Image (cartoon, rainbow, N blue to C red; front, side):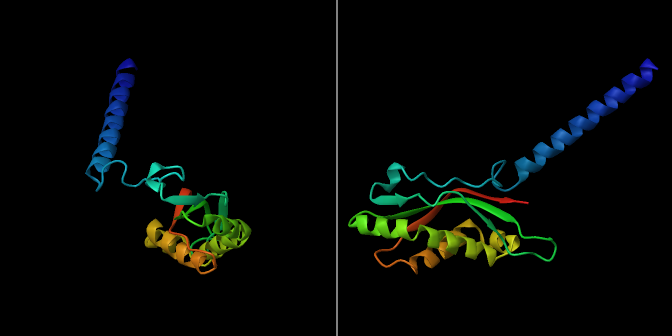
Length: 158
């Protein structure tokens, strides 16, 4: 019996080695290396890159549900923490407008994600989603315009 146990142990070790080696090779050969599938973080609002910019980060975390796909029973939940960058200058009135319209902006973001399926959003990519949100939000503002939309957090929960 000990010989059979030894043979089974050797087979199990070889099988584990093949699985681990195969996994490492697949990730290493993949375009972009190991970390290509991960989302690149946006800069923080306090970043020195934005010395000529102000940030509005009072929207908080938003949980929106995407439009239902035929393959799913319900839509997919999207969790994001947006913040908006705008140019410095006469920003007190514009900051006040952003604060007053924060519920409307949150509603726009909810509406945007509810109009698209997860597949559509993933095919568009994060950059296109941000550009479309920027256009929607700027369409509602009077006192100024936002320069960019950033996500501190952006993930899909199934």
